Picture: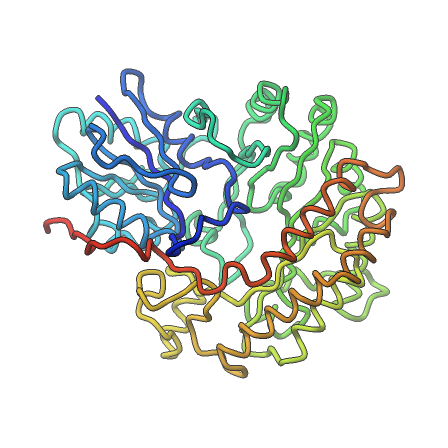
Length: 464
């Protein structure tokens, strides 16, 4: 039996190559390949970097959906289904919108696939494919199997993606993670994590631990860090800022090879943070009386131990003003962030934010991710205090401010802030091209289509 696994792009713009900066390993595809039983001939195609051979013989197609890739995924599914090939979809978006997903596929896998995927393959073999699959319980993460052989000679960025845990316990109302994992957090067995890293370290320049919150279980992660330090690898990850207030934990991260962390600051406005259920971001020391002070104290701990910060800020909550954009950019410059992102708020389906905006009649599209008129970086809802156009315009202005030449130079020349007291040459060498890439890409994604705008067909719905 042949199985074709597809990783869809967000879309394709007429006359333009796909944006190269987005091309990291397609970890969901490798996870599905690793779960597929022996005896199945697997072919893998990444829509971001290669054409899809729709006429190549195959018995089924598997596609993992994200909200931003859903429209393109349904276009791909339609091409295969017109050729009589059954399509199986899963992933975050399929779980958030299962009724929508089953309109364009023969089978939909919701939730995590580890327990249920072998049954899907067995049903496919016997011609008894069901319309929907969901495991009865959450899988033990010892079941994770990643088959990177499918990546072959594809030109991904030289970063190895590793999953160390899943989920997040925080209730941020804009985040689909809490909906998908029902505010739970689990870690993989530590020996499994260390073994996977050890097998990949030769030739790997950098590891990215893709956990939504690496500090979701700080006690357990502390057990991981000493043996990880002995492997002598460089890595980056994502974590909540509350963990950075524990300077001992930060020191252990640095000793284990952590170079940088992505932290979602989201806003400098306490009322906004309360509205998004992210009050834990306001955590601060006893002597600190402002939220900026709380952020600054945590960032000082990270700088002291040579850990760079990729800070993210979102705009569009009800208490935002026009001044908020420049204030966030200036704060990011003052704090010498390695890189930063300034983007509009996105209401993902299935989140409390989406439900609230829908209930208030503030969504500008019934399903923005499917609407042919929607374009990337457009605000798909009506903000309370600003217009959609103002948010887009000022997000761009904040990016220009942060990635201006004076900002890049001042942050880059502050060696202690971004490269550690002992000076990390690897971070220094990569700082300049990374910041220049972001400077070049300030508006590069604006107006990008969801789906392939050259695709001539119509979405083919499955029989009911």
